[in-house]
Length: 395
Length: 226
Image (cartoon, one colour):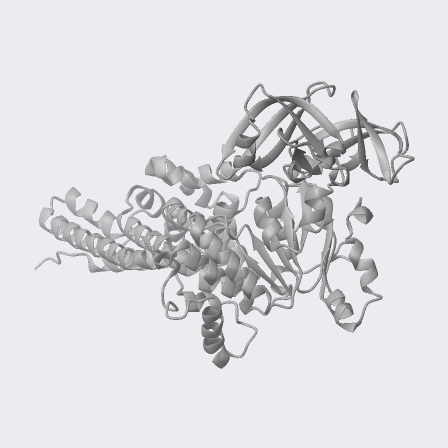
């Protein structure tokens, strides 16, 4: 389990030049198992300067895993190492207290000290610095999160976004070796959230440390993160770039967790003699998929295709592209949401599986797409991604 | 002229109240923190036991304490062997009883105050690198301060006013166990209503001042909690 998760790029990093090697040494590596109160079986690595998003449905153990890294969950067993400091090593009975781990943690509701001003909140995390520099350093940190002038406000006198910035400044005040963010954008309104996204993206460039962001929001993860780790019931299922995870999930469960609408079962028919393709059977339909070596003919597979890999056939002018995996069916749903229209098609010959695609609304209109209409689409072979079939159908 | 106010009894009451607060405050803070944050088996039972003095008739509580303090009981015997005088009908015995019947008045406001501290605030302080003692002194105490203050005031005022338990356990020995409340009762029994009325007024004034102090401090503390 653990081996499968480790980012493929870390192995190659050793052969790269010194800068990368440094980043590799400053990395965070986590491998924890916990039975209670929330079961965990998780492992991942995050390099210095990298932002890793821990993503999964609520209750999947994201926050608990983050608290393990900070040393707040005392029952965890495993190995946690950050910047060559061992924080947790159960066989060696090492389990550093939160005070001994230099982590910056932004809590979900920020957990600011309500009786202290913004300045005092930040100063509270500067205990490791000489007394006379704490004040100036705290002001500097507050200025870096655009809070200059609000130093003497208490948390109750600040807006949600301002509170989040104080929490960020306080987390950074400790000169942490890792920055941990627990759903830091969940408690603010949409406009503020967009602003805070930009600020984090800007702030990151000045931070040379691993950053772990816990979020249940896939768009947020895709937008902010360099890598993404999918967590489900406390298990890390896949680690990769957001693009990788969201287009090439390791199995049907991950595909569902990243909200891919088109996940189907199939059987590997054969390798296509004519091209670099693997042929799969989808009930009575045969599809060409990008060649996937690990699947032998006859194997049951799950497969998925992103909505962007499905092309609607034009009614007036058929094109060459339509020869690529053409399938037909009747339109069941046609939902216009703003500029895009989401179309659901019951595919003929595939036991009426529902295929979901998205086209610009004007395209749907020009092609007369409406419920009940027969339509044709092409499934781009390179976009079809095969996954091992598992009996595990839990969502 | 007959002395109207039994100053000796009043001083004894104040001394008892001060000692009760001094001893009960650290114990109460420790106990109420545990009750507020720690989940352990038997927690409900402990909470119920601590609240008993609220509902038990003072004479019942006093009876059990008196039995426990008697020279024949292990506790009473041990105390007698150590200090050379019995626990019952002594100031020490009075203080022990006072500590017990004040438990709910000290613990409940403090427990509520510690419970009201947002769950992640203490972990956040630990993640800021603050030691356990600094977290206690700089975070927990200031945030729980209104509750601690009302525990102090309630304990102090309630000790001044307690009658039943005091009479059962301490009796009415001038300078040793006769408190102001007992002295008032004593004067009423002797049809000296003027002295009783005066002392009652003194007690009323003290109670009012105590409550005023608690209220004004709590109200000043409130905007800070924001």
